[in-house]
Amino acid sequence: MEYELHFQEGFTGETVTVAVDGSVVARFQASTRMQTGLAHIERLHLLPGQEVTVHAGDEPGGATIAVDESHPFVVINREEDRLVVGATERSPGYL
Image (cartoon, rainbow, N blue to C red; front, top):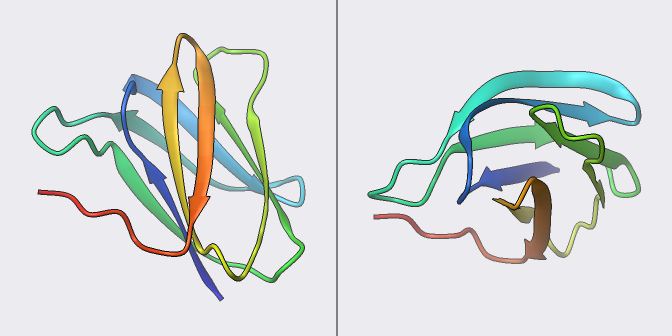
């Protein structure tokens, strides 16, 4: 299934690393565009039950997300050097 990670508010150019079941599958620089509130969309082909881990910048912790086929869209915001994650069944909209 296609799974979308929507990196939104709070990203200021830090390197983001995305791993699936412990293996890095993506690495990119994320910067939030003030006009849209979007920094980056990462599309992944995943199976239910796989685990996605996201790290941003030098922060020690990250966010771990269990793939859920009923919620294929995940929004990720950076607040005070931590990642806040929420899953939804609908794609977020941007201007």
